[in-house]
Image 1 (cartoon, one colour):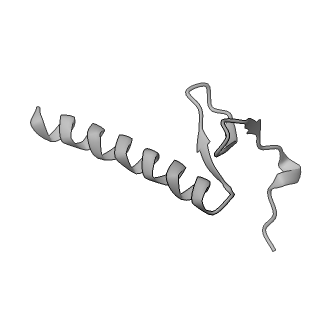
Image 2 (spheres, rainbow, N blue to C red):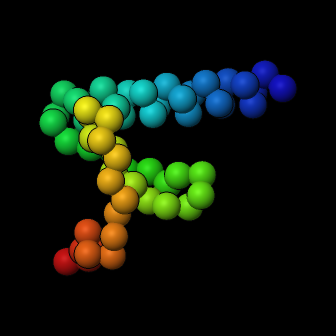
Length: 58
């Protein structure tokens, strides 16, 4: 049980660190929401859905 609790805490801390890095570098983080939508979240809290046009594999 403690391992699961520790893992959840580590995941939360990793997300918080990513947000801090995004703010420091004036960029955004990308993640998948609970309903399966992939979004960009900017450091100011603005959340924008990622569309097929945003993806490039060059």
